[in-house]
Length: 356
Ligand code: PHE
Image (cartoon, rainbow, N blue to C red; front, top):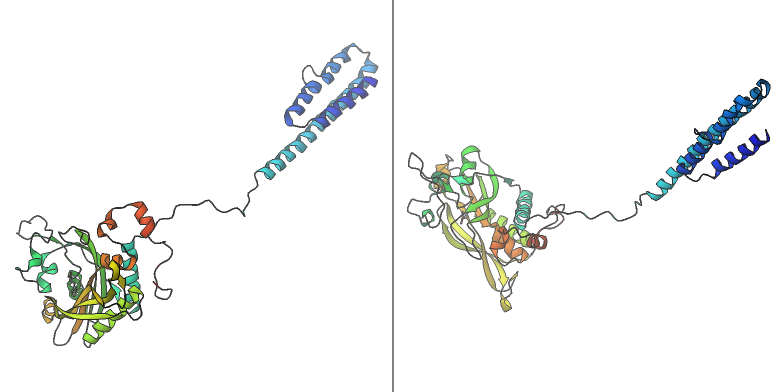
């Protein structure tokens, strides 16, 4: 019995001292394992007389249970503190700055189109679209561009292979065919803008075989040249953000408008640097005019009742002027360094209220 008391004290001390699950398991094996100290004592019971065997047996079993319970309790305590330690170590510091992530950029062409749409949208225009591959009638004929017109020459224009009926489709050379498509499918009053891709056989620092235009068309019973001028002066000042920008209408010629004009904005070219605004020099930026009655008639619109105006401009040209981009070809090179420099942050959608 004395031996048992000493053994109990020793074992309980060992269990309490076990600092991790491995040490605890070693203590369990040395007490209750096949060759453990309690197990060895159990084996000696056989040599005792029945009286003493019963008493010693009870005491040994009680010790066995006590040790097993103590081990379980210690195990639970160790697991808890291990979890506490892990929680303390793996804690997330929400005040740390977030990891950076890659944000794409809006291409200056898209940005400029968005800005134009924002300005004309505010004036009540809606956006229309049309196909890039056009037929001769929509791209030329209906717009009063006769067969012998230089715009039709192979050197200027991309034609597709001749169809069985002898006709040839063309990559649209301007957004004006969408004027025709809109007048054929919608009834006046019309007030549309048409941003989109256009194609011509040109290639140098200011011309690309694929480029973008923005077309405008208004048709109703009362719109006159004063509205055309007011709208375009307002547009030029808004897009360049210059309130007193000088704007000049210069007589010109387009087959689909009559009268026609080209619009110049004021600038200065002093010291080889181009600055938009008052400065005594002029820069051409768009073409416009009153819709030629022949074009209205080609679309089945009564030209004695309806009239309107149209305009067209190059998006690249405006983007180059506004954002100081010197070479048009860089727009299409997909150079990420260029895009990071000239591109725009996606969430800052252009709006007139916040400024363009
Ligand atoms: N379509 C003309 C061009 O490409 C531009 C324009 C459009 C002119 C509408 C007048 C009216 O040059």
